[in-house]
Image 1: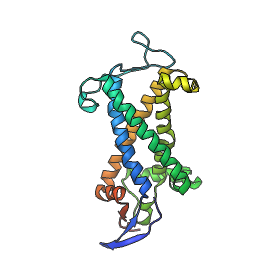
Image 2 (image 1 turned 90 degrees about the vertical axis):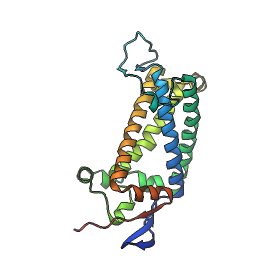
Image 3 (image 1 turned 90 degrees about the horizontal axis):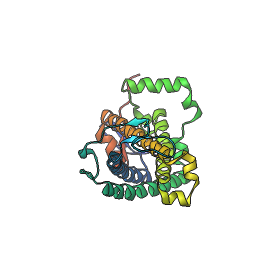
Image 4 (image 1 turned 30 degrees about the vertical axis):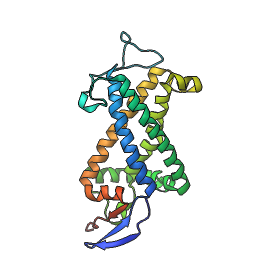
Length: 244
């Protein structure tokens, strides 16, 4: 995200450059990878829809979570194919992992993480957080120049996804691979067992899916044409200021 630099007035509103090219490229590439991984992951989960803690877990062991199988229309492939689902999952896991590392390194260099993602101290004050929560609950989205910058709730959610959930998702996925465990034995110790890693992997995937639902809902409510255009071209039309 950039500071607002007017490009052209339209309808008494100003068009600004909102998202950097690196942000836009990573957004769409990671969106594709995450959707494919979620859908292929559901097919993999269907092979044994039970989760355990620790190193071991099988049919007769007590599971902390047991779910019905996901429907075929929500999975890749749509018919039961564990081998095919694994191929899809692993192929796009490398896409997600490589693009995340590249995005984080570039965001560190250009200051995007520090400037736009990490919340400032005053933004974390209870009064400020409470005001942001009330504004979102009333669907009072930022207007004017404030709409260009991420608000505190956006920063916290993006920070959680980019710097916590996605790295945990990738590490827990690597911990489930015997080949990776042989190369990096500390992975299993980190998650206290392969079944614990599988549970953490599922929890992270579920939280990311929840974030996607909230994110898409916010886009629809705040003006989908303007929001999607800004993530494709970078150009964003500032919403009119509210009457004070």
